[in-house]
Length: 143
Image (cartoon, rainbow, N blue to C red; front, top):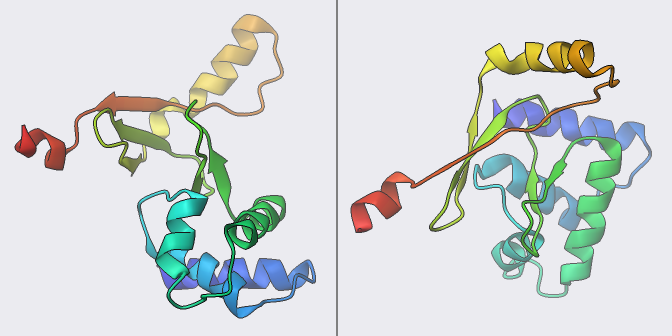
């Protein structure tokens, strides 16, 4: 599944005439292989062995390009580091209060919330976001 999505992301970049560099491909591949919603620094640290001349700025610049093309979402949770998600379809996140781990959670029943919110408030709703906080299995067993 991730491979198919990765190929679609590469095609989306090519259609916008974005040149596919080895670093760009590696960053994209890392995003599609991990389920961890990494920060730019985590991506950099994971790839610096393969690309010793790559800078953190290169990672940030590529993530910005991916965001503009629509193949990556930036997630900010009030802390200093944004996290990046290559799953751009509507879904929610369950977040560990101890270690910060983020896991995708799909629940289609909330799609009607936007329609109801529009009806009740008169707002033109663009999107919504839900976060569920708790303690992950790893942290739970460690305590």
